[in-house]
Each structure stands twice: as C-alpha cells, then as structure tokens.
Length: 247
Image (tube, rainbow, N blue to C red; front, side):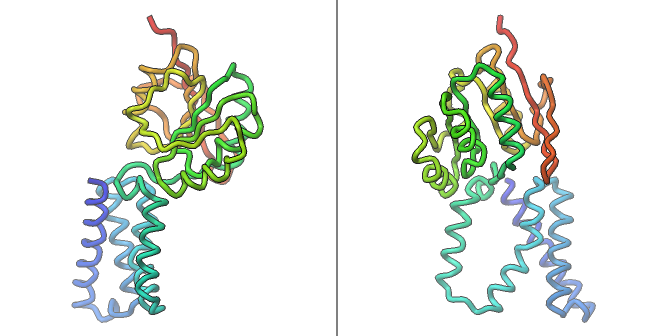
C-alpha cells in the first residue's frame, strides 16, 4: 500500500505538471517542470501521510531520471543501479522499514546503558551495516551481540565488518516470528509503521527487568522508563522501556 501511494504521488505530480505546461509556456522549461513535479509529488505525499523517508525520494525521483537520460549512460548501468538500490533499501521497496543509520553518539549512549545493565545478550533490530552493534561488540567483548538486518546488502556489509569478532553475529531474521525471551537489552531503529506490532511482541516475550531501547520513534501505549536526548546531528531521542514484573 505504501508503494502504491508513492506511485500515485509521482503520477499525480506528473499529470498535473503536464496540464500546467499545456496552458503556461513557462512550464516547458525543464528545470521549472522538474521542480514543479517534485513539489507536487511531495505535497501529495504529505496529504496521504506517507512516511517521512519518502519525501527525499519524491524530490529526487524525476530529476534523477532526467539527469541519467541526459548523460546518455549505457542501459546496463540502470539495471545495476536498480539492483543495488533494491538490495540496500529492501524494506522501503516492500513498503516496510527503510535503511536508517545511527550516529556515533547514539552508539556511545547505548554502550553506557549496557555497561550499567547486567547484560549477557544484546540484539540490534534493523541493524543496517552494524553501525551500533559492531562498535558495541568491540567495546564490550564479554557480551553476545547480534545484528538483525533483512536487506541483503547492508547485512552482507555487517557480516564482513564483524567477521573477526567472536561475540558478534549478523543474521537476516524475521522480527515477527523470532523469540525475544533470551535477550537482556534490545535496541531498535525502525519506523513508526512497525512500532505498534513490534512493541507489543517485545512486551509479551521479553523477561521481567530487561530493557528495550527505541531510537527516534516511541512505542505506543508504553510509558518509557527514561528518555535520552542525544547531542548528534539529528538530535536523536532514545526511548528506554523497562519490562515490568509479569504476574
């Protein structure tokens, strides 16, 4: 459904811009045409409440196509570009979770939290290229660190980067069929779309006293134990949720 809405936004922007160009000669200019179409696509995305990561895609989609055709690149280049982008942004193309990268400051804050907890097993959900999990595995070699990433290329990069770490494992696991009962701390940088389902699953499966850390997006209907404001470029917020005793 998310992908269908994105397609609609692009087509709507394109048709409306063609209509404007029919009546007003100024829209015949390529730059004016591209800027107008991109702006209309973005406006449609806002009206349809598409996730925020679609905005730069809508802005750059048609201009990128125009530039590529202007450069007259060979046909195989486009095929390779599509394959690479698909392998990187696997979740976004399926309408699920895009690739998000955490900052060094976030990694340092999570490391401090882990050192305060009695942690034996840590997992990063949607780990990307291991920007959080791998530094933690290096800094705290006494704990088991897992990085879960469904997109093929980021997962492969994570596997390669962590190949020499004995306490690190990179997996392509399905969040919604996995068992989270063995983990002491779970970190996630996902999207608002999946937060309701994943947070309910974690509340039901994590052990009492364990910790769930969500980067940037709060878990609905769940009161955080603490909220950390990270002084990085994106002003990231970490929402920390403690699993209460289960009766």
